Amino acid sequence: MTIVRVDNCGLGLNSDLTPEELGNGVWSLTENMRFNNGYAERFRGTAAVFTTPSITPYYIAPYATTSARFWVYAGLTAVYVDDGTTRTDITGTAPTGAIDNKWTGGSLNGVFVLNNGVDNPMFWGGDTGLNLATLTGWTGTWKAQAVRPFKNFIVALDITKGANRYPHMVKWSDIAVPGAIPTSWDEANPALDAGEQDLAETSDLLVDCLPLGDVNILYKERSMYAMSYVGAPYIFRFQRLPGESGMLARGCAVNTPLGHVVLTAGDVVVNNGTGVQSIANGAVRSYIFNNIDSTNYKRAFVTANPQKNEVWICFPFGSSETCNKAMVWNWIDKTWGSRTLTDVTYGAFGQINVGTSATTWAGDSEAWETDATSWNENEYSPAEARLLMCHSTPLISLTDTGTTDFGSTITATLERTGMTMGDPYSVKTIRCIYPRIDGVSGATVNVQVGSSMFPDSAPTWQTAQSFAIGTSIKIDSFATGRFLSVRFTNADYGAWRMKSFDVDYVNSGAY
Image (cartoon, rainbow, N blue to C red; front, side):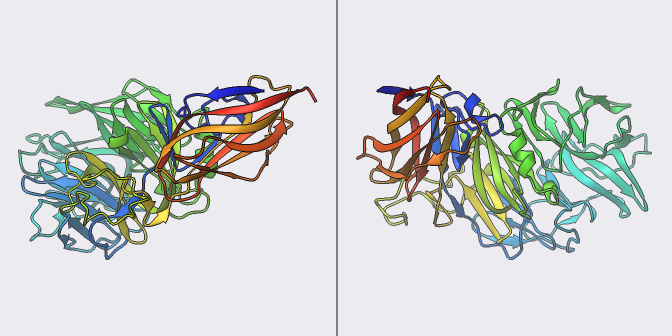
């Protein structure tokens, strides 16, 4: 009899390497599990927030004024803002874009800018009595594929002027005065700071941009440029960055303490301004790009969940038309997990305040024996940034709240196949598994063991055994082979996490 402890179950998912080559604590398959602080942990739930949208939202972003905190969300034909109490239609002239005309925008000097690449860029100043208006100084026959604030300027990319498209053009406004938006885009007026520049050194097209510290990083399809403010007479300096990485689609980058995390056309990288480093290669890179929908791949987006130090790479999995899968990277622990999504169209993070939401005796709707929330916990505290997502249902949701996904049980799975126990040549027989699982007392986790005789062979799984948190010590199950497997799946409501487990097995020799 030999008992081997598998310490540190929080080393994350690696779906790209063969399971036989993985170390203990690394998982070959996961679903709805995250990894941090050495634990493998089931994701918390998702719940609807705000008034149910009357349109399908395809974009969402936070926006704050001196007197209110809003979330702006936009559909194909209308734009709304919600302060957590009241929803207001600020559309004005109805947009005319399609699903794949992805929205871009952001806040500049307390004014929110919005653009869909088909209509003229718009802005809104925070007064719910006024609608969106065409961007001041913008010529009506111009269009831009992406519009983003940077410093006291607005930057537009991939410009169309009348019938002529300039896919390499970066155009910027005049500088804005505090509390206002720029009033001119006239690059020919020497008295203004407005200008434009073609970045045609590379043939790939401009996609999007995102500030990184004091520099605006311009992403093309397979290359990157730095846009730095230098003042008159040139205003901005442009410099190509090393490497051949770009951005897969608009919205496919997010800022983190380590730099930008970017979904490229073939990888997930961190860009710190001096070069890029892959964080997916040899871990989940093949999994992402073998499974992303080949038709709707540009509907993918990248966002962050700062509360958990995570980046979410959201994409249409298989043949889905919306994002139904997120690969989740923890930038502290450098681990990968996975999360199923429900028809997600976009996501963003920011502060949220939805009425009085602290969990009180009268206000907590979850059953006493299943509730995993803290007493008097406010899920909607405005003190920290939270991740919100919009859905094609239509719906707007808050992630990491409660214990269910819109009332449905979250099925979470940890699976490791190909375990050799340090000896890939001997036949071994598992006798029992000793999990150490934290969770709601009485909740159950199903544990299965399996085995195979040869590398890359699918394991033969034994009948799952039920492990009751707070009651069970071990599960007894037998499987014989050179390569052993184990699978943990929750059977009911309870949130749970696991730090380590023991495998009790007998070595039976070479045959």
